[in-house]
Length: 67
Image 1 (cartoon, rainbow, N blue to C red):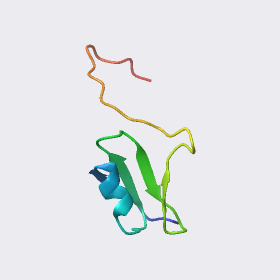
Image 2: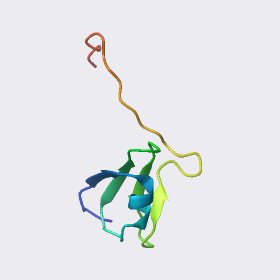
Image 3: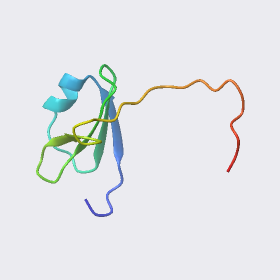
Image 4: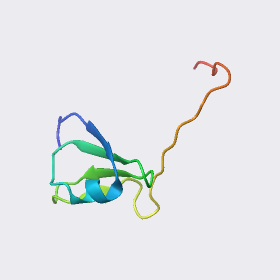
C-alpha cells in the first residue's frame, strides 16, 4: 500500500463485502461491528486475523488521565 492514506467507509457487512477493491479503504461494519481492510490481492481481510477485532462506542463519565 505504500504511502496511501486510509479512507474510512461505514456500512452493512454485506454491502461492504460486495464492494470493489479500493486501495487504502478501511471498512467499519455497522451491523456486525467488524473492521475490514482491502488487501493487495484485491480482497477484503478482517482486521485481527481469524479472531477479528470488534469496535464500539464508549461514553466517558469523567475526564481520562493524560499521558
